[in-house]
Image (cartoon, rainbow, N blue to C red; front, side):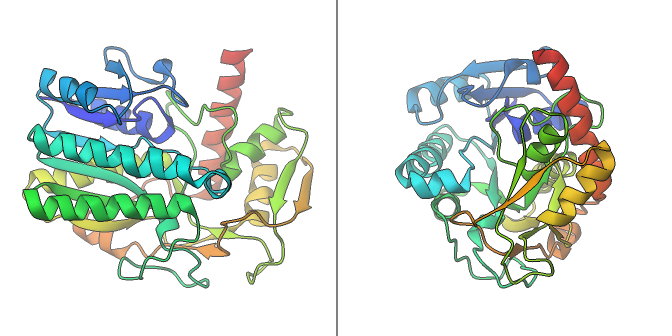
Length: 328
């Protein structure tokens, strides 16, 4: 038996693959390689190139490797793009996830870990959010993920599938051992873009909006190291294996940093006073999203090991320099 990781050659998915392999698990990856890279995977991992919207392809992989557990990462994640092209997001994130869930049930998959997002909460007025906060997404990206949450819950109730939904906050950083990181060149993650700017790969950094009702006018987010996020997914899988209940869990550290504060830390870590331009807000960006994370810590005994913004930025900086050498 093996664990199927969809989107496993991408940023977060490849860290999940590493976390599983480090624990001796057998992993199979499905990825269409639109943003992922085969070289991001450790040696010996089975990679099947294909689309999670292709039921026949999915069923063949699940049956070939006797898959009983799925960790689902494959998705489009750019909020402004979702506002400009919502049907792309409802097709890719929602409709294809429906096909994945349906195929999983038909093939007897028992456990399902879904990487959702804090974007399902929408604009929560600066208060830390817990899992009882009513979802009110303000972007098609957030709505596409929330719809998948609903489908998964309904399917589980009808067919006995066990699941954990992890609503993660702003993911950043790279594997501490330098094995993988955020490798898509046009990624919009703030810390990656800021590090690329410090390295001269971008002419400047745009700060979208400085008139929010926050302490310095810029957006505030809860930044979580990608390795801690991957560990949370493994802990969720182990919880279900022990017979634990299905549940929805926030995955963040419980404290937020503003865009301007992050820029200052990137300048400090890199030693480069790069240009940051103040530009108008982007559509779909809430002012503040910070997690309450007590539930995941208690339910999964999840203990973050990389809760430090400078460490997060430093790991991203090391990875970006390594990536530049690889691509140079």
